[in-house]
Each structure stands twice: as C-alpha cells, then as structure tokens.
Image (cartoon, rainbow, N blue to C red; front, side, top):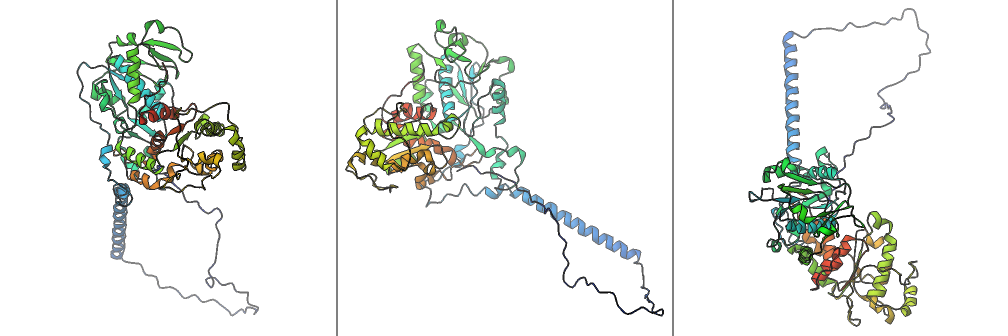
Length: 543
C-alpha cells in the first residue's frame, strides 16, 4: 500500500466582509411636510426602575458559575475522548482480512522487529557499518560487510533494511546522525493518524519509509555456519552501549571523507597507492590486528570495494552474493502465480527511468533496451525492419538497431509461434499475423519505476510493438495477498514497499531479460536472481 500523504488545511477567512439588512428590520421614513406647531411636545413616560436584591445577584452568579464549570468539564471530557480515540480510529483497518480478496491471513506480529539484546560471548569483537541509499546499494554493502567481518574474525552487526525514501550518502558524521534520527521507537501512534488531520511534528515523514529485518527477505539461516552476525534493530549508539557493553574508548572508527575513500585488500603488496576509483587501500590483515572491541566503518557500498586476490576469499564473497536471493514464502507465491499467468515462457525488460541520471537519460535507455530486446534477444533481422516501421509509424522512434546494447541474459530464446500467446490473460492488442512480426507476440513483462508506464511516451514503443505487454499493475488479484501485510514495528502497510521486489522476482522468472545499463537493480536481476532461478551460477562483478 502506498503510504498516506498527510495534509492539514486551514480555513481561509473572507477577504472582503459585507453588510446586509434584513427586510423589514429597519425602516426609513421621509420627513413630514406638515409644519410643526409650538404646542407640540414630546412626552416621555418615566420607566419604573427597580434594583435586584443581593439574594437574586448571588443566585445569578452561582448559576453562571455552575454553567461555566459544566461547560469546562464537558470540553475537557470531549477533548480527552478525541485524544484517546483519534489514534485508534485506524486500528481495525489492517487486521481485517477479507477471504474473497486475500488468500492467506497475515500474522502482523511476524514482522515485529526484535529489539531485545542478543546473547554474545564476553570476548566477542564486532564490526558495524553505515547503511545508506536504495535497497540494492544496501544489499551490496551487506555483502561486503559479511565478507569483511569473516576475514577480520568479527561478528557483524547487521542493520535492518530501509525501504522507501532512502538516506542519501553523506560524510561519516552526518550519515551517523541521519541513521540515529531514522529510528521510529515510540512513534507508532503516527501510523494511526487519519488523512487530512493534524500531523504532530514528530510524525513528519513517518510514512516515507519503513524498516524490515534482513531475515524476512533472504535466508540467513544457511549462512550461520560460515558467518557470525547479530541483527540490529536500533540504529542508536545507546544500543551499542546497552546491549554490547561497548564504551567509546573501545571503538575504532574508519571515517572516510568521500564515498570512494577506502577499499580493502587481502594482499599487503597491493595495499599501497590509489586505484582508479578509490583514494586509499587498507590491508585486511592490518585491520585484523586491531584490538578494539568495535570496528566501525562508514559506507561499504561498491562492487569493487573489496579487492580479493586469494581464491578462498573470492569464493567467500561469491557465497554471500548467492545468499541474497529473495526467499520470502509469500513473495514467492505471488511471483509464481503471476509467472504462470504469463504462460511461463515470456521475456522481461527492466527500465529504470524514475530519478536522477536515469530520469535524464530515460528516453535513450528505453530505445536501447527496445533495440536489444527486438534484435539481440528475439533475433529479428534487417529484413523485418520495414514491417516494424509500418507497424510503429505513429510512434516516431528510429527503429534501426542501436550500436550500443543494454545488458541482457545471453541465453537461447525459445518461443512457440503456433501456440496462443497467453491462455489465461487478455492481450491489449490483437496478435501480429505477419510472419516477420510473430515473434513480437511473445508475452512481455515490463518492470519500471515510472508511475504510469501505460501513458509514458518513452515506453509507447513497447506497447505498440508487443501486443501482450503487461506490468505489475495488471495483476491486482494476485497482489491482493499483500493488501493487509503490516509492519508490526511501525504499523505501516508494506504493499507499496514490496512491489519493486515482486517486479524483480517476476522478471527473474522470465526466459530472457534485458536491463538498464548502470542500474544496480538490473545488475542484481541479471547477475544473481535470474541465474539462480534458472539453476545457473551467479555472475561476478568486482575483483
């Protein structure tokens, strides 16, 4: 579920007041034409004035005081009622599971983050790092942290996954402060604020993000034999002092001055001098000799952050990357149901164009991905270009193969031309009957971070060329299983936060995939997810 947008609207006062007279209330008379006579006089009848007695005054005062006291008590009582019930007004929304729409009752408390202190050895040493940016950057940081902690013989303190609005990378101290301020402890009442109601200052941005534990997404149990780690749910330093008994004097901080300040090397001879990207190399063997209880790093993001030459160390990193495949049972069930509806044999395209450099280059990336999909994956030749030009004449996009190619799965494409495209779904357009275009009848699953891909001009070429193009929004019945999935820690509905994971998983089940160059999301789909789903070894990046 998309997070609620909380607004507070003030009443606007009228800028120009007006005065009106009720009919008959005031009458204006013309002056009399009859001359006044001397004998005319005005007689005023004296009013009978009488003062109320002191007893009456006392009675009035007591009555007034009683009325005021009653009004005050009523106001306080009503205010207290509103205060105690305003947060409860949405309590019954999430737990209600409708059997017709949801295939499974979700245990809300299963997503409750564990804030208890872990059981640790008295002489244990730890490694902690700062997490930042989007999910896949957090995933790469975790892969590096797991590998590095094992090589340093330390227990890794794993922070929760932040989904939604990311914390952008900044310098060590600023990032440390941002992470501490992102804690939602004591703010669960913010999840029950009604739309268009007053938002307390402490609840600002509450709906923008949520935290979930890594072991809810991936299977960390299989890694426990190789790695020592504890799951940390509290990002504050107070947790380190309270749960681990670590004082400031027992901490060694490796503070970087920029994103690519340090990289870590397992060979002493290669630990001198800068690389093409990183300013300084640190020897892992040198760090392993540190005696401090806690080794604290800033960012560990970067596929080349660890320069591992030893084969056993490189194998260790490969194991961590393979373990990042999503294994959540609910997400797998939804993914399998969508994959079956698509007929099993379909192609996928991941087009990132929602923000940053991908927004600026979105149109070019879409053309490159389309060209790669049509000419490299499906194998349409130059002889088919004229048919494509006729088909897509109203799109206005050059259809010649691009010199550059988008990343794609180099795997033989198999599609039964004589079979109906999709037996369970209705395509948007009539399938192509021209022999040179029948390959375009293959079902296409389009994953993108644009809000409305069906109306985006850069994506029109996909919907025109592939009559059976689908997005995640076309499977509302299957997605209903997530409608009532709530984070038990902060009370937020998780559906909107989990849709990108389903996009990746459905594409990972496709026969062939084309991704966006430079996207860590696409790289994960092509290098890890797709290959693991098809029984292949992952593709390594970074040495």
